[in-house]
Length: 110
Image 1 (cartoon, rainbow, N blue to C red):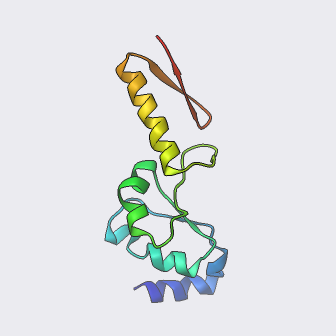
Image 2 (tube, one colour):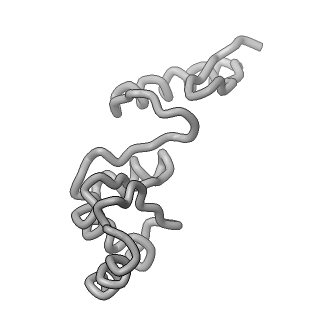
């Protein structure tokens, strides 16, 4: 099915100009051709949620430059994200609240 779809898309635009590849959910019917698209569009990046990246997409995709977060993108490693979330979780358990400011989580005591 992918070769036919790629041929049709190629009639409309050059696949190498595709910048984002999005899908509704992680199942074969929705993103089974993700790696085919990443190959056909080498500058493209998959768009997914934080949870989607952690539990499915990063393991499935042939390229590792796929993580995106809501809001302005900041340089992050998986370690940075997990450490930050662990700190936020600890603060919530202590009764603190978490406020979002841009892409940074700000923890304030109640």
